[in-house]
Length: 278
Ligand SMILES: NC(=O)C1=CN([C@@H]2O[C@H](COP(=O)(O)OP(=O)(O)OC[C@H]3O[C@@H](n4cnc5c(N)ncnc54)[C@H](OP(=O)(O)O)[C@@H]3O)[C@@H](O)[C@H]2O)C=CC1
Ligand SMILES: O=C(O)[C@@H]1CCC=N1
Image 1 (tube, rainbow, N blue to C red):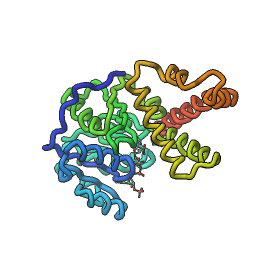
Image 2 (image 1 turned 60 degrees about the vertical axis):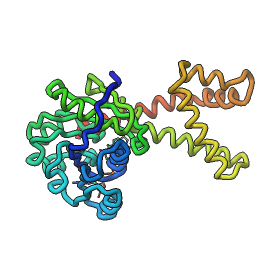
Image 3 (image 1 turned 120 degrees about the vertical axis):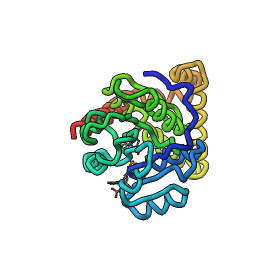
Image 4 (image 1 turned 180 degrees about the vertical axis):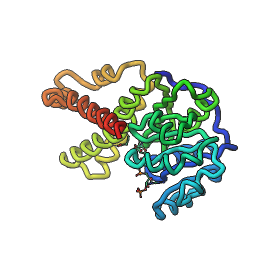
């Protein structure tokens, strides 16, 4: 796996069309807008009228059909559920011949996309995550050897508007990327929910419990990113012998919580593999 450094700045002459304007497309669009791509260079195909209205308020072109959205686009981002990808590919097969196609659909392989697009070769598979909306996303990318360096750079530039970008050399690793970072924000939100509940159970008001939890999550993430210490070492530094943290960690260990977390991510990876069989 390699981190993409020296990503070229966003090319504001390229039109990017999203197929599907849901959660993930909106997060990626947020990143592109923040990075300076003019809203007029972003188009979205989205069947839900309320979502089209939300997107139009941000100045992007919102259309009911893929045909309208991809007209004139340089890059097409497939942001629909894996379960409907085949129908979407059939709809797009005649429309994307001259375009780079980036798919973010969980579990859907480059070969499946190429087949659905009648042998199209300019394909990148990406697995971003929702913090893209605030430009702190993490995206795994994969492309086969057929893809030109120019297209690789264009895909990396678009996704790096959302945050960190890493290429994997073996497509099967995209299942692990999905389990760790694609779904990953949900695990941290889950932990935040539980910590807020715990704070309230111990007498804090909801606002205070929430503020303390979120700031602690932010601080822990920032420390782990900038520190030379591993997460394990940073945890040890919080944990005084026989103190409060030790009481909590001992409880987690006694209940095999670490094993359960590893197993939970295993379930996510397994589901990604299942989706790839559709
Ligand atoms: N959410 C996440 O954190 C992440 C999601 N992904 C992947 O991103 C993809 C999208 O996920 P997410 O944004 O959460 O899903 P959403 O359901 O929020 O968004 C998908 C949107 O596409 C619309 N849609 C359905 N059919 C079509 C069509 N033919 N043409 C255009 N749009 C259509 C859906 O409308 P309707 O509701 O009416 O069907 C929906 O609004 C999935 O493949 C997922 O695996 C990847 C990384 C992270
Ligand atoms: O839950 C899902 O299937 C998608 C893929 C990764 C995050 N959300």
